[in-house]
Structure formats: C-alpha cells, structure tokens
Length: 630
Image (cartoon, rainbow, N blue to C red):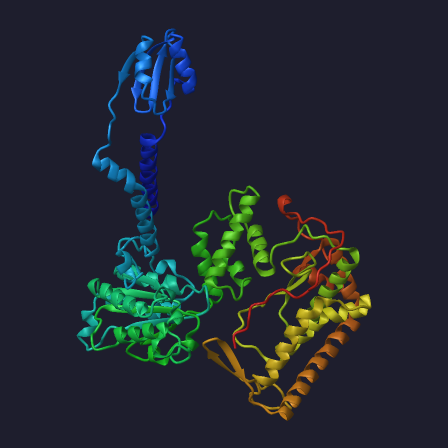
C-alpha cells in the first residue's frame, strides 16, 4: 500500500512540473485580433490607428474606435517614421533576456526529466528502490515480526502428528536453556514434505506465531537471478539478517527450486543453482554456527533434493504433512466454516465423509464455493444443499447447461453411464456409486461418481481387477443396447490399460510373471524424467500377453454382468433420460428391482435446464476418484 501511494505521489509531481513548464513557456491566449502587416500599414496611412506598442517583432495597436489588434512586423527601418508621420502614438518595450539560470533550466529540463524517469523505473525493477544497482545481492526474504504474525496452532487442523513433531521447536525457541543444560542443541533445519495444499506453509507460520519470534519467508526461486553468484550472495545476506534477529525462523518454500541434485545440470561448477545450494549448505552447517536460527523448508518433491541437504546437521528431521483423514477433514472444515455464516443443517462430519482425498486447500475451496452458491441464491446462510452443489462442481466440474445434444447422443451417453454404474453396483469390492449424471460437466458428456466408504490407504488386486471391469462397462453397454461404438470410451481404455500394466510390471500381481518389477527405471535429469529399458524383447512380449489376458478376462466379466441385468440397465437409462442425474438412493432402488423414487426438489435458482438437442462431444468417462496411496 505504501509503495502504491509513493508511486502515485511521484507521478503527480511529474505531471505538475510538466504543466507548470508548459504554462510558463507555452503560447499565451489573448483577446487581441490578428491582422496582416499590409493591412496594418494601410490603416496607418488612412489615419485609423491611434496607438502602437512595439514589443520586439510584435506590434500591438489600438484603433481610433478602441479595437485592439496585433501583427508581426518584418525588418522595416521606416516603420517608426511612418507611424510618427501619421500622428500615431508609439511605445517601445525593452527586450527581456531570460536569466542564465532560467536558460540552463529550460535547455536541460527535458534531459533531466528523462534521466529522472529512467532512474525511477530502474529502482522499481531492482526491488522497490532499496539500494539501487547494489541491491542484487540483498535477500528478498519478507520478515514478519512477533506482533504482525497472529497465526497459531489453533489455525492449523488435520495434521496432529506434524504439529507434535514441530511443537518441540516452539519449546526450544521459547526456552533454549532448558535443552542446552542437558547438552541438546537446537535443530538446524526441518523439512516439511507432503502433497500440495496440505498446509506446510501455514504450519511453519504457526510455529513462529506460537514461539513469538521473527519469521523470514522466501521462495526458492527468489535466490536465482540471471547473474551468476547473486543467489549465493542472497543466501549470505538472509542468514546475516536472521542472526541479527535470533532466535528466529527462516522459511524457504519450494526449496527444490535450488536444492536439486548437484551435477544433474549442464552448467558445471559455475551453475547458478549449484552455487546457491553450496552456499546454503555452508550457512546451515559450516564453520560458523548459526545459533538460534531454524531453517524450515517445504517441498512436495523430496526425491529430487541433494543428499547433502538432507543429512543430519542441516535438515535434522523430516515432517510428513500428508492428506488429512476423515477426522482431520472435519477439523479443517470447522476452521474454515468459522469465516462464513453456516446454516444449522450443515454437518461437518457428513461433508468430511464425502470428501476423501481432499487436501486442506481443497476443503477451503469447498467452503468458498458453497458460499458463492448461497450468494447467487440470495441466501443469508450457507446450507447443506450449497455444500453438495459445491462438492459436485469440484469433483465433476461445472455444469454445461448451454450445451445442446441430439437425442441419440443423450441416449448413448445414458447407456454408457448406466453400464459403468450397474457393473460397479454388482461387484463386491467396488466403491459404492454415489451419483450418475448425463449432464455435461467439464470435458465429459456424462459421469459416474463412486465414493469410497472410508479412506483408502492401500490398493488390492481384487479391487483393481474390478476397477478394470467397471471401466469396460460403458463401452459394453453401448455395444449391447445401441449396437454401436463411440469415442467416449477412449479414456476408460487408457485407465484400464494403465491399471493392468501397473499390476504386471510394478506390483507383482501376475501369477504368470511372478513378483518381479518389469517397468523401466526412471531417472530425473536436468531436462525432465528419462526412462531406461530393463527387460528383454522376449520378456516384454510375455508382459504384453499378460496385460492382454487381464483386460480380456475383465471385459468378459463386465459383459456377463450386463447381459444378466439388462432390465436394470434399461430402468437406469430411462431414469437418466428423464431426470439427467440420479443419486445413491435411486440407484439402490433400481438394483433392488424397484422403480426409482423421484429426485428431491432442487432450489429454483439452481434448477438444471433440459438438454434436448444435439451437440457433439467426444469423451464420456467416470468421475475423478481419489487417488490410492500405495
């Protein structure tokens, strides 16, 4: 805010100076009329001019009638004598030469103004004018003191184990002598590892807020510049500032930007990132002790970090900040719900059960989307219907109500999604079907959403085989009931093939090939990941044959289930064509052989528009499911 005010003030001063100069030296307006010199001479000879004032080459006169005028005179040596001859009163003004200072100012003002504007923009490009050209080596870390940082552990939820790991840091920062008496030393560094959006940055800020110590925050990319050596200089400057404010915390977000394996690049010893990393290694555990300075770093790519960075003495401990479980999601939802007016019917535990695989950032987005839905409907509070609509939007994408589909394509999509849903409902280990829709959402024409009953930690062979059968259910339903094939199953086939390939090559789930890894090894390089081949051609043929066998067997399983339950597919397709979306209760009615109950009435402002006509579309695929952690 201060920078904005300063910039506005500078530009106002520049505009004021320009206006002053233009007003001073620009042409001045006058009420005098302009006449040509020949007309002026004729009027003088006719005796109609009473008075003339000579101001250099400018003649200002007054006629006998009192009319004022002016003209520009050429070099005429007889002008004054002619005026006196015809009884014209003549006045003359001396030429006013500008002062030397004013002349210098007028001649140099444009150049000075240009230099001033150039200096201003250069200072802005070099970090807001702090140090000018000598600020390249200064740290860009932003400091939060103990008075401006109000984040505490109460604002962090869903990662109890991680909070227990770092609570010791808070005690050490508050009372270091308690540990030093027993010979303990302060941990030099803590590396927070976890998926994106799990709250690593928030947890580091909470540590500083709890300990009431200064907090320096910087991104890994802020060290690297186009000039070699700047990153190392900024690391030195950052640690010097931290030592002056010790005890304190330095937080480096996305440390993998400078902490990658050394030697992986092509720059040799002069590579900017390697020099920055070397300086960071020395500062964290070199000859000079950084007493009272704790470095906390966050990354979701711990596998690419240099080994020297991870050894004890630098990052002494690694804290895993994973995706929250059902209790963690409930706590996170309650934290974010405090910021919006919540209706009495909203149950955080029900929402937590229906959002497996959500990170803290995803749950914050869920609450925000629900609040936006409520605002569109002119509600005073956010109710459960808003949360359900927000969850559908996040899981399946926004509804494309304006898309027009032909009746034949709607029917084909309905059979396709019914095939997925019926196969999933009949298999014993499959996740329950939560919702099926033929309303186009995102890039898909229809979606089948399976919702796990509990958080999935590991995946198993029986379940993976059933997932392949479910993916084949859409194409098989098209073949059986529509007697045609569409391109909508392309993504289903890709996912099914990937699952079968991973079962054979990574997880040892093939009885024919046994417990051996046949996948090529992947290595991370400077330009990306590179894979190398580790199996022979003969073995690769056996791998391909085993993948083909798994896919064919599960295709046969899905086809048998749909052939035996034609009536259920027909009923579900009719329900989808009528209502476009059916939920778990309606699906249970259909699988029990009953007619599905009508859908619950939706809020008037959220009533879906009917899709009667045609449009095209290319893919029809199951809804995205939470990824399994293996």
